[in-house]
Image (cartoon, rainbow, N blue to C red):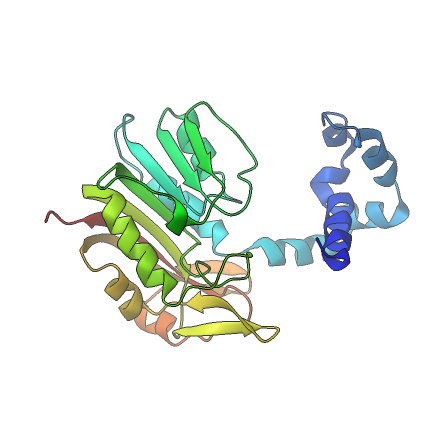
Length: 261
């Protein structure tokens, strides 16, 4: 890990408001517990905890598509408890843990550590394309905030051309007929956004996303845009005109069902 990344992680670790709260720190089962507690009383850390401007900036940063996608899944999830779920890109999300806790058989795949474990959760810390699953082996696939990143190369994986298309091909392969697919992606004018001179994230317009869903019947499709940090439902036409410039400002959420062959 580079020195720059280490500094960023150190800063976040000791200035995140929740981490700084003494009642939280004392519950930690880590050797660094008391060091965290002492650092939590640094003047700058106290400033970070109680300063309204800091809190606003923090929540502005985390108020991404993730604000929408987890509630969307839970509000529209109606599969029986014996269903097998595949969470493609499960790192950083609590959906797998939530579904496993409710008794579902959940499999997660991600480059990043899931950050949790559960007896009903099986985890592959691998490239999605390298994990071999049997055909028609899952009742539901979650592709939550992942199609925009897959194969781009910035998580250390080898870049793959048209990885979003290839990922959808694999999803169709592993999902049972009549199986359910959940998708969330940043929406707007279709483009590949570059950051620091490298391709960073895909932005999907409704037409292209529906093209990716070939072989599926779309049961629900919702469009959102952000206005003054408030996520508000909008029309397809309005979303299609939005330009992505480095921050999530619009989103597309889909629930679809694989058609019988």
